[in-house]
Image (cartoon, rainbow, N blue to C red; front, top):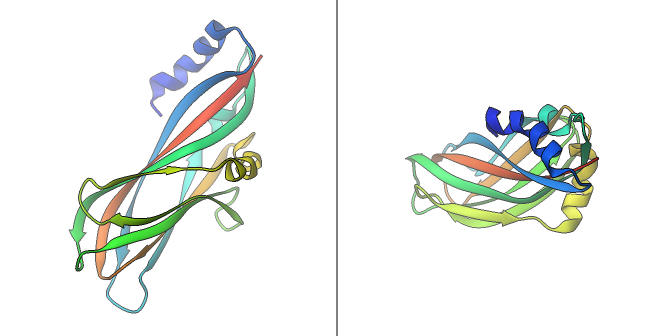
Length: 169
C-alpha cells in the first residue's frame, strides 16, 4: 500500500459521502522458501502486517469491515531448484505471532519456476472468522506454510494480499 493511497483515504471518504463505502488496499510481503536436502520438506514463516492506517478512525467515518477476498502468490528468484518441484501450502492470519491462526487460503501444485503465479480465492466463512483479528487492531500476523515435492529448493515468494475495507459514516 503506497503512502499516497493512505494519505488520500480521508479525502476519498469525504468525497464518497455515503454509508458503506468500499476501498481496496493491497499489502505485499516477500519471503524466501529455503528447504535444505533431508527428510523435511516443509517451511513456515510469519510476517507482521501493520493495520494502523487501515483501521484508524477517520474524521468522517470508521472502518466497519475488512475482508480478504483474494491472495496472490508469485515465485521469483529461484536460486536452488531441485528436480522439477512444486509446492503446496497455506496462508493464515493471527492476532499474535505465537497464537492461533485462521487459514484463509490453501494452494497446491504451484511450480517452482520464475514468474509462476497463483490466485487464491478465499471463502466467505474464512473471511468471517478473520474479522475479529483484522478489525480494530494495530497489527496482525500472516503465516505462510509450504511443502515442496522435493528438496533442496530455495526461491522467493511475493504474496499480494487484497484487503477490501468498508467504511461508514
